[in-house]
Length: 257
Ligand code: CIR
Image (tube, rainbow, N blue to C red; front, side, top):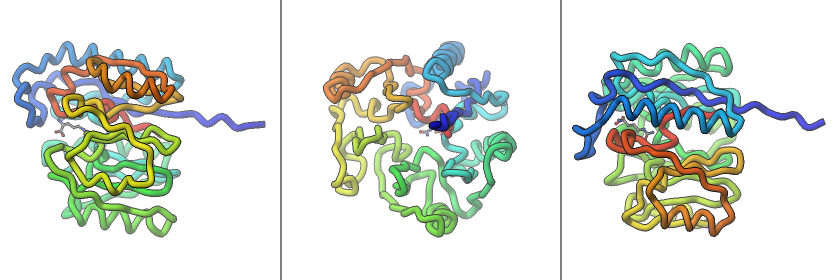
């Protein structure tokens, strides 16, 4: 009999302090925390409807960015690698994640001076492409490699520019297909893959979430939606306006394993 494996997503509600999150966006001042909470509820509901078991962590108003759980842990097989966020205000977010993940996985930690955030870690099969960014440094990548290379994983550092994280501008959709925005890193690293290149003005839509044969995309990116549908993919749109103002995107709001 085929074993059906459960999929889990760790999510954390939007805190009251969300409008004090870290952001480089010039629309940052307009963040509507109540609207962000509603958008987050829709996100959670969508994951549930797609058959994902939600693990909900208590939010924490002292951590304005705590809803972006992706950045705090990287799950590989039976390991949870607790990251070392590259900005002081986010460091304490890892505590709750570690406590919960210890119930499911063996814990490893990246430590200072190494920094790494989950948004910079793109896994494709047994390769991890890791963005070298304002949040992730070479020492953090070295520590990841020390944990994962002996387990048969290959680590590929990627210099990125003009974006927060590597996964802010690309996502792996499975079956050899990558969706990516041009101009943020050298696309030759993905030379063996089929690619959907999003139009320049729709770069935000290069971060999407591929779940159980569906692709969740942010609402308002019609050209990218069409490109995905042309490939036969089933697309679900979610309003992400408030998270975008916080430099966050779809994958950032969960750790899926
Ligand atoms: C930050 O700047 O850290 C948050 N405001 C946004 C984090 C987005 N996370 C992600 O792309 N994985």
